[in-house]
Length: 456
Image (cartoon, rainbow, N blue to C red; front, side, top):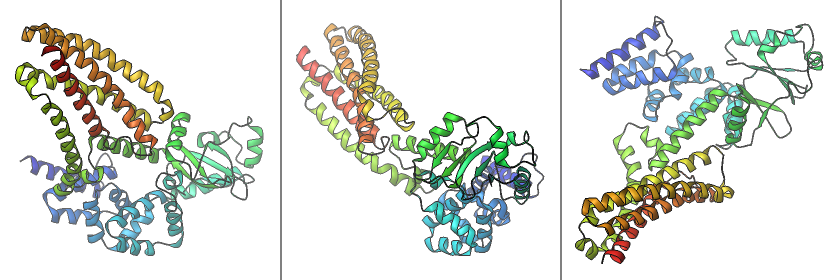
């Protein structure tokens, strides 16, 4: 019953969008989600609605689709319609969509690229010439610019015309260049209405405060993380992208920054859990399961190692059955403490707040917090164990063990991601599995070792 309701709701919203009778326009992400609902319940109906999408929105919707749905697009929609949809996209989105299609069907991507007009091809090739993490890979070439000796009214008339033709979106600045194309100034759109439209931009800038319109720029080959930091620090709507000589190449807008942050956060979360973000976005159980199985296999090996440590103290456990009851508590507290330190460290690394050179200060802070918590909860658990099993020395054992394990949990939860970053390895990938190995091993060894030494 619930499935039918979901299907009917998706159909109703898609119909309203196609017939333009909906009160609130659906975003590309909304449309992709409703199409996903149709595909889940009725493949044929999904295909019908897919074909009804206008080229003006098809490209934006396709970008929001997971691979298995994008494959349906390139198989069911005629190539000329997909080409038209790509041409409707801004240059950065067009390059991104073609890259997604290429991952699914390289020959189809080539066919679509060859069908684009020459200007679109050149823009896409320029964007795709950059490495994945460089600023140039995130820029769009569409922007509002004028040379410094141009009259303001001429520039504004051009902006009005290009907006009417749908060539420009999300314009927030006028980029002023010299006649060679070197970026000189960036003027917020809201300031333009204050100026005399009959004056040249050179005359307008000359009357302004010195450096008022000096642009913040991103160099095309610098890391995108640096650009994100600049945009956030200066609360910018967009940032100009220039080459090493200062020539204006394009701009990066806040939606691109938002998408990067969202994708990075998603990747960090998946990596921290030891799963593959790409397989998780795919509906096939096999691919999703295979991605998780790799790290589960690694985890199994580390669990066997931890179990072997327990095996060293089988006689101690046999003599004091209470140890088997309390042992998971020590391991659990250590694991949670380590995960807290790990999460904080990975986040600070991702935001660029710390590097390996800051290891001493970071370790001091995290280990101190872990040690304080270890002392507090060690005392609490020591009292509980003493009362629970009516043996004071058992409380001493678990108390000392908890202090030891939480201390090392904080240490390894911090040093593991810092070390991985030092060797240019994503600090989120597999950190949790490595950390669990250390916290379990140290927790079991310290608890059972102290028990053997003190109680026997």
